[in-house]
Structures are given as structure tokens and as C-alpha cells.
Length: 301
Ligand code: FES
Image (tube, rainbow, N blue to C red):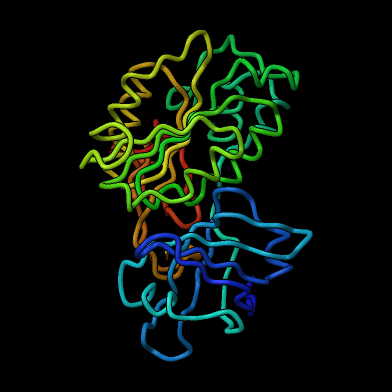
């Protein structure tokens, strides 16, 4: 849907990182974690195209929507200069978001979830013996959020959902430096164990987030990964998850024009499972409508 959204607040979190809170009641009621919106920054041609931005939070009762973004160009630069009281055109919610914990607790196993949602036993899957019928079974799963830079943006609604199930979650958060980590304290306030890696060593351990992942001790729990960040990071996370048999969802970031499945500017390669691929073994998928969230084993990296 298209909404005229009033800006309630615009907060500078760290240089270049902003959180925008919008009043958009109907849109907020429809949001699912992991979806995104297209924000039209200008009524004119500068910039012409809307900007895709992850939904960072939503409150259907309050009718609010929050977006966390990093200034990366002209459009987001212009967006960052808007103040409370201004209004924006916002399309959304768009795309398919995270497979949420309530899906897991209503189905018999993680593999069942994989098969039901993605339809291919060969491409996806997790240990079949993880039963998640009862609410208490959330304790068998280790929700593991892996974020790179602004990739942290679509994760808070997931953290809230898992917290409500009583799960102990971990956030592995990688960035170039401390001044590129935002909202880590808010995850900690939700009871998430936050572990940071920075390339320059200015916060957490020195190195990349994949080093944190490699060194993770999971005990007898099954890590269930949710990753968002730059594609090389996602590829490395997906590879590690695959090697260890950990179910992993990734939220892909691609350039988008329409956000509605019409322009094909966002296509990625997805393993084919329907016999319509002409023997290639892969087919095209649109990140804006088939994603942005995919099971990591679906993606041709
Ligand atoms: Fe146009 Fe995906 S952005 S098809």
C-alpha cells in the first residue's frame, strides 16, 4: 500500500546513522519482521527513485514504523535532512520477511518448516530431531543473529519475538569500527548476548564477524541463524552454516528500483527445485518479492 507518513522523529545515532520514526497506522498494522518499505524522498526527479529501507520496528497499536538507515548517497542524504513534521510517501510493507519463531512452534520440526515454506528437501533443512511443538522447546534452539554494519536494521523484531518465547539469543555484530555499530545496547536491553567484532579493533574483538561465528560454542543447542549484511559476509556465513548443518536465513541487499517485482533490477540466482530451470540448476529470483529473506542454501552465491 502507499501511505503518506508523517515524520515523528529523526534521530542521529552515530555519524551517518539515523533512526526515523513515522506515523503510518495502516502500514504499521500490516508489517512483518524482515520486510522493507520503499521511501520516496522527493516529489520531483531528484532523486527519481524511491529508496528501499528495512523495517527496524513497528507498533500496530501506536501506528508507528521505525526505519534505521545509513546515509549512502543522495537519496538517504536528503532523507536525513528531513525533520519531524515533514511527510513522506512510503510503499509497503514489501517482500517476504524472516520465518518467525511462531512458525517453528506450530510445526513439527525445522526441516518441516523448511519444506513447507520453500518446498525443497534437497536445498534446505536442519536436523530432523529438533522438535519445536511446545513453547518450552524454544529453549532447544539458539537464535543467532549475525549482522554486518547497517545489516542490524531488520533484526530487533526477531529479537523481541524470541525473547517473548524465553529463548537465549546471541547477536554477532561486525563493523569496520566502533562508530559504525548502532543499537547494540538495545539488543542487550532485550536480554540478547551481544558480541562485537570490528576490523580496526576499536570495539569488541579485532576481526570480522565470521571469526566470532567460527569460535562460537553452542553446547547442545541448535543455532538458527538470521543474517543480514554485505553479500560477501552473507556468503561466508552461509558457507559456515552449511558446513555445520545449521539452518540459516539471509536477508539480501540488492539495488532496487520498483520494489514490486516489475523492473527486474534486483534479481539474484536461486537454486532451482521445480524442474523449470532447463537443466541449469538455478533460476532467477527477485529479491524484492521472493525475498529479501531466503534460506541460505537456496541462494546461488
Ligand atoms: Fe523491481 Fe525487484 S526492484 S523487480
